[in-house]
Length: 152
Image (cartoon, rainbow, N blue to C red; front, side, top):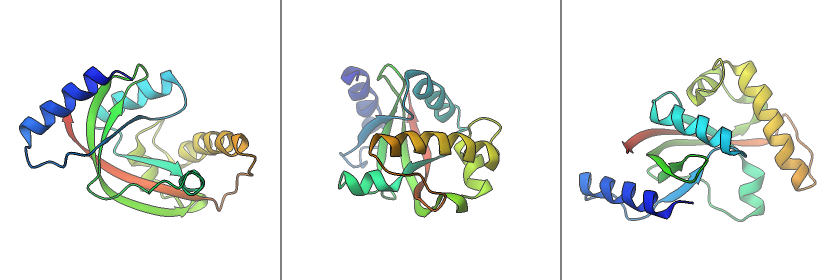
């Protein structure tokens, strides 16, 4: 993780919005450098406005769910800061009830629900395999929407 670029982007953001909270998280999408790069670009371009994550991992790691108003620094595959986003909504729903609208807002592939289900099933199956659990179409998914509030 390139702490210099993270700090620089955060300081630039704080200068433009001095009333912004002091806390943030910095993370990259996906499980590979290529995926992180691709998705960071989609965020910066304003195409990707949502994400989905495995609720079970939050439970197992005793980690708090994203909260509305939370600020996150999105990293590319090299750990460089690409953008700051603010969470605008969080909903936990079963995998098979994720909507076409949410799939579209994730901005990936052809933006269809079929594409979303295909790539996310593969992704979630890998996560579950790593913790010796089984994937289910009823698994809870954290559907998070966000807006870009600052870029480089």
